[in-house]
Image (tube, rainbow, N blue to C red; front, side, top):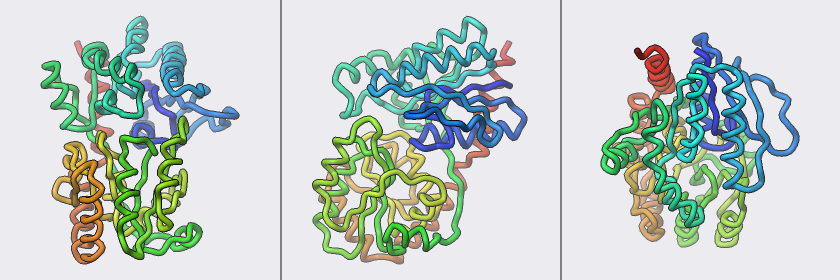
Amino acid sequence: MKIVYVGTMGIPARYGGFETCVEEVATRLSRKGHEIIVYCGYRGSKPQLKSYKNVQLEYVKCLENKFLDFPFREFASTIGALSGAADIIHFYGSDAWPFVFLPRVVSSKTVLTLDGMVWKRASYPMWVRKTLSFTARFALYLPHATIVDSKSVQEWYRRSFNKSPIYVPYGANIDLSKPDETILLKNDLRNKIYVLFVGRLVYEKGVHYLVEAFKQLKTDFELVIIGGDPYNSEYEQILRKNANRNTKFLGYVYGKDYENICKGAYLYVTPSTLEGTSPALLTAMALGKCVLVSDIPENLETIGNAGFSFRHADSEDLKEKLQYLFKNPRLVEQMQEKAVTHVKKNYDWDIVTIQLEKIYSSLIYKQ
């Protein structure tokens, strides 16, 4: 099959969960003999990399405005994909549904992966949130297949519109090797003496609750925050202003450096108030980390019985849970073992790839 991925910042993954998913799946499908093209966004000079792990890369320049950038890149990528006579065009993003019309002109099959209930994002203007909420049903009926990565989100669509999208989880790669101490030293980190958060620095990620909880703790542990927001740094500036001296902002960290910093953490925290299945959370579990998450349904679904939780949007409860886990290292070690077992059983990129391949094939060969 000739499969084209649009709607992400592309690969190698340097932005978020969608990019990680595309990289893991696209490279596996390429190894199986399919022709794969990924459309990538870029800022500044156009990248020179033409392919990555036998996946062809095409580029569309990003716009500065967050709410114009996505539809512009989506439209430009779709037009490019149509000119190449793709069998499958796989869109990413809940607001990508208007673009699935175009591929039908040339009989390409369309798949759309949704990113949770995006209309609840406090960082979006009200008019954007209302528009996304009103048009949510279109994402179920216009593509040939619609996918979500969370059973909780799948159930919400079923209850709301009497139609269920297809559930396909994310995956994670198990790696229990010890962290490279040189990477920790480079960032002035002490092995197992810090708590880690990784993700985009936007309001719904709830990092302000984590910063506030950490300010109230009397501890030698540090708080390490990896991530940022390429569209708006206002939230990050607020976090930096309110953080104590034990908090370190490392900006964007990728690849082996990121994995080693994750491996060196004592605890991984996801304080989000809105989420799908978090790839960063799954990665932490796959790297053998004990995790502490806010008790929203999507997070609890992801960790199962292999992690700890606190009341979402409650920095006081988060503080108490952190203090408890700092005082109980043996309990943390036991939960690390559970986390790895849970990921092995439920989140495997090879199985995810097979599931998507079957969906693509069923659309092409459906009578």
